Image 1 (tube, rainbow, N blue to C red):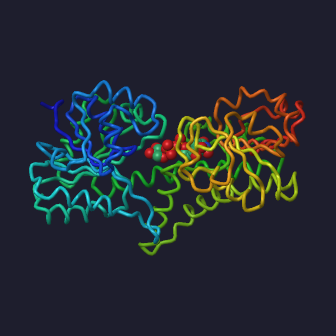
Image 2: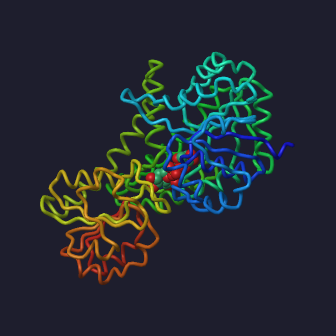
Image 3: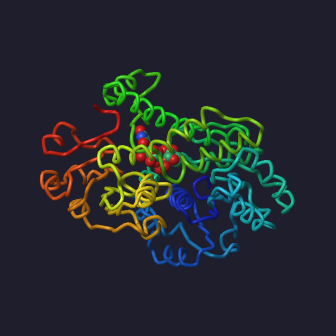
Length: 429
Ligand code: UDX
């Protein structure tokens, strides 16, 4: 039955869980395997270890078709397709660390009944060719290798999986590619088939271009500050050109998260491994690093020396709607502020500040108002919608000095100045 395939998913992280749940939702029988006993126990008990809207409900309603296990044998029993969804963090050299991918591939030895091994993890171009050799060595000569990158954004991963702009499939065996395309039956999206190396490159190129647009917006914002133009007006009108479009042109305090920083570095490393220095990509990364530090400079312009100052950071997650602090600009701000001798106060409705090392020196508050009370300055780091509802009139009087750097252009400059704030934002006069 085309809608009742048996699928093993390796890795119960962010991508593995979303992939497993969505494939079960599409009618397949899925076993998700992870090496972390705590995580597997949590999932078996019906809880979801990550925050992702809709994921918990989807897992619950598919529990007949979706199991979690520590056991490789149980995951592989009768499986036609194995998905590799383990993480590929940067290694010391800057290359992606593929040790988890290789350990999954090795563990497939003997599972010659698999018709396809699908890698969803973001990997350097050329990984598929190495995986091919490893699969052959493990006796899986008849199993196709498929690169099937994901383009899901956190906070909307379930909907991105079920309603993608495209499904990219790079297969070294047409039958395996066709099988993976068939697994997605029920999803209305173009399936783009190509060779393995190109599929691996699509993911890196797409993320690099999105990051490029944001760094571009940030650079134009600085130019607007220097010339008196308003970046919101400028990029709003630029984005109306149908060749450009409005997305990913919002200036801010820099991009973060689990993908852009890691993937742009990985692509840069990949390029330099081929003897090529990617000038544009390097500049995109530099602009982003500078953008986070500019926020500190702008506070110094108003406050002078930051030593002993109380600074409130409003929002810690790398974007609203997630608890994820990976590569969040807030972490750079917090540790830079601490290095300047400031006391960092923070607020976030979801982020787990105990998970991030640099935050150990920051004090957590339950509300933005409490974080700002008595502070010398506040910074809007993440554009949580809750921040729009803050009683800014009271906040202005409760602060020791009403200095506000709005790193996400969330608030109205005219109103904030009327309330007495020394208000700064990104690229707006
Ligand atoms: C991103 C990609 O969108 C997704 O396709 C890929 O698979 C993984 O990386 P994600 O990291 O979840 O997803 O977040 P996204 O919403 O894309 O935002 C990334 C960062 O860019 C955030 O820090 C966000 O604040 C910032 N951003 C985004 C801007 O500064 N300006 C924008 O206009 C858009």
